[in-house]
Image (cartoon, rainbow, N blue to C red; front, top):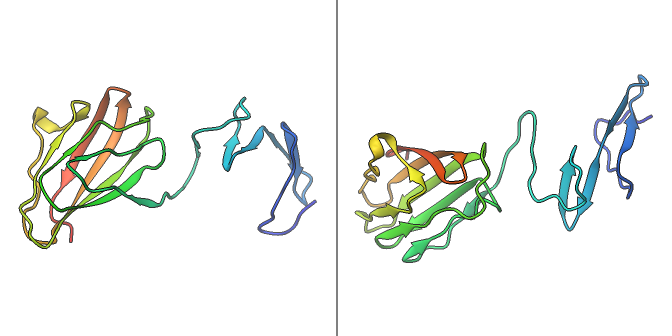
Length: 159
């Protein structure tokens, strides 16, 4: 039994169990493969992490360019500083139920615009207008409803 609040556990067998100091046994499939962790899955090659409870994800910096492609298979949260008018391509690796944010930052010039791939869905079927001030920050909140529908809402001028 472990009575430490945190522990490093290393083993290489699936369907293992842990027992706490009260004798409660916790079972589940745990897989560790190529830097990925899977909990409660039947695959030794997990590619996504599902969490029941609170979690946080890093904010990935998107590469600025004529076309910007968010890789939803790699992260949930993103930031981009626009140095020109850009197009946001459809995300790669979207999973229904996935959600996150994209922070859209105007550069020191401002007045940059975005157009969107056909999977991005906005209220009233109209792409939103970004804040145009130099260094303005907008936040796009999204939820993947289906692999062909990323429902979004833009919150303007958050700081």
